[in-house]
Length: 286
Image (tube, rainbow, N blue to C red):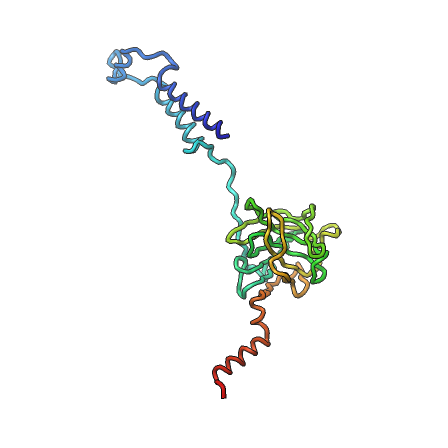
């Protein structure tokens, strides 16, 4: 505690003063002091300093104060450094892992509105998720394209700045947190107003209503939104995106899904209208 550190510093300083003053031993005689000042003893031999008078006290003060205490009087941290969060590699998408990107064409794990990757590692599946939010990001495994009766894994950013992995089950439009959490080897970070996480989950699990076997194919539901005191709230968009087809964990694809802002311009009818309007403007009215 702070009080203990203050007492320790006071003790060290008093010890140093005590040792330097000579109170710990027999005080030197005037002749000895003169010999020390002149550098010679009684027989003309070079004088020697008293052991411990300066060397021990200096060692004690420097060792205890400089090596064990910082300038502010607090102990130096002893906890091992924490490995930084390894960035998601989008270059592996479609090669050694499957990826789903939702957002602007050409976006990656740091710029997509939503990003998900998956890959098999032994008997586990490793997921990576990222979304443009300060709250939570999740993926649901569904037998249809609708919310309700879905196994959901979510990464939630709490008020302490931590990102934790939670297990949910969709009851209609509401996500209920499940105590049994199959996630392990959890990592998470909140940076640049994005929630990003990585975790593993067993490929096979005992049959249970709230857990699905990932070796089967499922529709993937994608959602993200704000959180209040570490609890998720309603997702950012009214109709969260869902995969067009069932996704197999054994097939690594790189799937891009344009966000709503870019879906209009991808429509054939919209493109035809743009071409017609451009031609009309260039040719002018008759």
